[in-house]
Image (cartoon, rainbow, N blue to C red; front, side, top):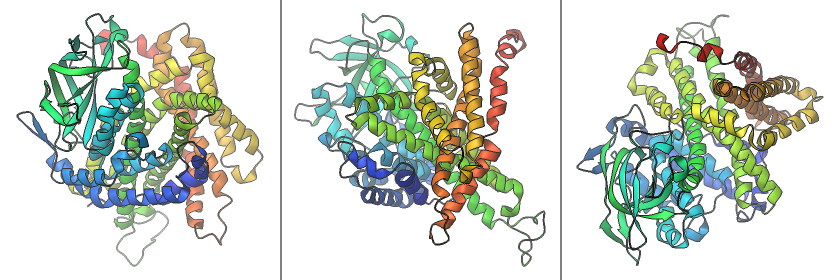
Length: 596
């Protein structure tokens, strides 16, 4: 049976030591969120994740969702778990107090979200999509729409979805066909079909609020003609009670590789009543408020699954007795040594650990900037935060999910043949992790967004928001002997990133295929440098806390040791990535189509 224990020590390190959580209370609306309060929130979230959600993960995967005559039922125990989750106030965690929310800073909320994804990523999609719907309505809806929908979405009484994809178009939303025809009462009649709708139908809430992209009759072609509509499953009466069933239904659910306890629905809208959210033909901008948040959340999904997979691999490596150490028996009293003695097993475990802790630190950096963006009154700080989060969103989504799948697969490898067997739970993590690389914008699209849009934007201003603090840190610590295993390696990797950036900007101006050919390698290169910076910053803290009198000495020793492994064994990949980028697009684009 798999295990899971929330990594609270490392979460506290990121929240309190790496980013000084005391400064969070200085932001407007965060005054009550002291370090002590946030610690108590994390502890309670850990109990919910470990005791309520995690025990349903395997059974939910085995049972899956069921569909019959338009009705979708979640696996056994999910409704009771959702009620406990809702009653505990977790659906209201990151929402505004104006609508019944708790106003929790993202810096803490992201850590809670990671626990949910480790414990039961399929369950986490239901409240996760609802929060995305909350954000879209909160930022772009009318006052009437906010009052009608947000209190019940925040409380968890109602849930939300985002309906973008259609059978003939996914990434290319300019091909979207769903129609919205104005009605005399100011509403619209929505007709069309949507697919791959997470939580499109289920039995957890009494109403589901769909946010639907559609075209008005006078809409211009392409993405400039898309509008956003709020389309409830049940119409809402003036007194807030539920009225008639709307003209929409779930026509089927997908039978998927993973996240089987999450209902992935095909939805049919037949003259369904909806209301315009925001301005006509500006729906994509409104939906991206939701999608950008979801992309960060999907990155956290990758991190969450990686963490639980790693924990189980470590546990198995300690217990599995197989073979002898290459340097002589380490457990002579036993028939064999644990596989933890083998260098390749240790390589796998340290690789997983180094990526996970680096990603958690990077998520904390992004979360901190999101809090500044949403809450600060300093306009300069808000601009920097806006630039930074725009730049890092595709990196977090793609890097974390790529690594999440790689780590789940590596964790399974630690088990050998036993990892391939259902009982241990490892094969589920591999299957569950795979979708995160695809939905909310496939990772190749994220890479193209980073290289094709974010790098050249405003003359490279966004990139400077990342490069400047890295270079400032290197300049301030280049003579620090305690960091000699970190700063020079980071400097080398940063130079690789700068050379790659210059190369892409030069050749890409005359041949856009060069941008596409370099994009995936560039995003990984960028991500590795960001993780290298995280590890160097963490080491700068840990080296001063390894005193023998410190009861946490082992934690900080492990932090330094893991960081050294990353800098010596993983960060050097930047050199190979640079060489691949500089090789250009010719081998890809000149290959004959007929030869494939």
